[in-house]
Image (cartoon, rainbow, N blue to C red):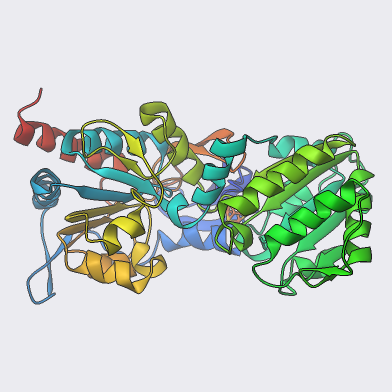
Length: 438
Ligand code: SF4
């Protein structure tokens, strides 16, 4: 008889939903149904069952033809590549557990690598802003139970974090928000009329790239000072209306995404959004939170932070940790030709980096550790298939609000398939042998 596994954690986005139920076959080997997840989360679980899944490592020859190799060969190639490189880049880490990240960092320290995660193309600018000015934030539980003024600035949770609004931010009835969405006012700032914007009480359809000006204008309006007729395409009256709406709330939360982190002004957009949040605390309670993307990008920053003091682009090539975004960030290093080997785990830069960087990866010794065929696995010399964390392997992950949640294993990986952590441990052992350290 099929059995239901409950309290399963979804290993896809930073919402890290922990209320999934998964129906598995009675032998515990096959996923039959996934309940409560959104369509993206469901697909992640079902994709692990794909018939055409890669089960053995693949190595490319000079002509780019792939052939099967053993796991031992994959471990040997990876260890030799990392030890022979002067400055290898070890990139990704956002779609794996904290345990694997920690082992990866130990290897990076031994071989003098640069360790960078997907924040480098996502919320890295947010991290820079937090280091500059600090942050008044909270947990998603506080949002659910208290927030009555919700701002989504440059983000589209209806598509990117599909259950965020139903679990935490708009629809749930919390301890002090018993009327659910009826008692909340929703403000969306986006140049496009997104599906999130269509649900808003107030949509500020800002001119693209002018977020800094509009954030400044809101700070002016909150203080009751005069404004020009329009700012960033938004009429003065609308800005004043939004300012009054936020001030009149009992608890304001500002969620923001890549519309501000990766547009003009970058980290300075976040500086001023944090300053706006601080200003609002003169009138009510206000907090701000980045909509972190991958389910464990936050964990990657946490583990790097505990181990080396910095949350991304950590350069260990001189034997101690250095952090300098713009210098030690993956795309800057790749485009300047400053790394001589690339190791990717838990990410797909082949699909998401600029083509100039991908071309550089294609010409370097490279390893892609990933359960899927991806554009990255297509350009890397070695593709090492592994188990799906959160589906076939348990481990710790951090939600977008820095709350750690233990993911669950629901089925076994195909026979002989290593987890990220197991593969990295084998590489670490071999690296230690090559380096002659105990
Ligand atoms: S919202 Fe995110 S974490 Fe929740 S089920 Fe969907 S993809 Fe998974």
